[in-house]
Image (tube, rainbow, N blue to C red):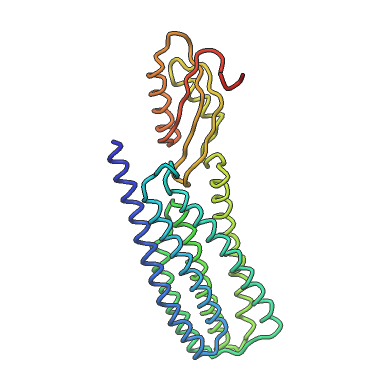
Length: 295
């Protein structure tokens, strides 16, 4: 059963790594196309989006590296292995999104005061191509439970929204000559980017601070163990944290009565933790009488 779990984990990790790598390559190649198109169309919007996509390609490369690193086995220096590298990558990516949103906000405010002329047809063609590229990359990454992949997907979503904004901007300029369309739509993108960045940043910060994993109620956990595990009369010193968003860990002290099969209690506790709370790795200290840590 343990061998099957390890195989399944490596299969999912390899799948995450492959998708991140392909999405990174796809977006990095299009950055070159968008830079050329932006220069030909004299479109600051496309050039800004090219910078956006270049940053996102770097973010995807970082996420790919973190997924690859997380497959390395644990050693004496990192006894839990390298899983946290994915959380660090998500945290850095979220900070980069905040910085990017701030830059777009400053640029948008500047263009509201001084609108810039754009050649709409070339800009529209390049933006539409970028939209297709980002749709492909986003569909590959969207919907995963892995925090690292979700953080990367938020970068691609920012690219997708930027492509939509560039398309609408070029269309409005082409139809009505309204150059203010570009900064107005950029402000909308800032709101979306900050919302997604905040969600990833908040979850990554909780994991790095070793907060209680999402979906685990410690009071409910204590009540369940006391009610369902024969011989357990109390549970205390419960500490729950996570290596990544899908790898919760837990330690606890279980108070048991006299003449209780302690090995059976430990097996029962671990079974309940796995079945009811999804916790595969736990450390259980069984006590008869006073807790030595309370002295």
